[in-house]
Amino acid sequence: MAKSYTCRDVGVECDWKTSAETEDEILAEVQKHAAEVHPTIELTPELVDAVRAAIKDE
Image (cartoon, rainbow, N blue to C red):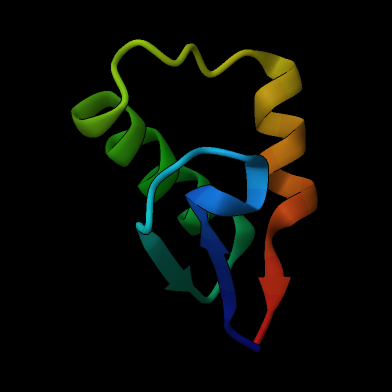
C-alpha cells in the first residue's frame, strides 16, 4: 500500500507532496526536500516523529 505526505501535514506553508511504498522512502524524500527548500527548518527528532505520524496510507 502506497503512503503519502505533504509539508502542510505538519503545519509548513508549502504545497510539496510525495508518495512512496514505505515510510523510510517518504522520510528520505522529506530530508532531501527539507534540505533543498527549507534549510532553516531543523529536522529534530520531534519533527521527524511528527512527520512519521502525518504519513498517510493511500
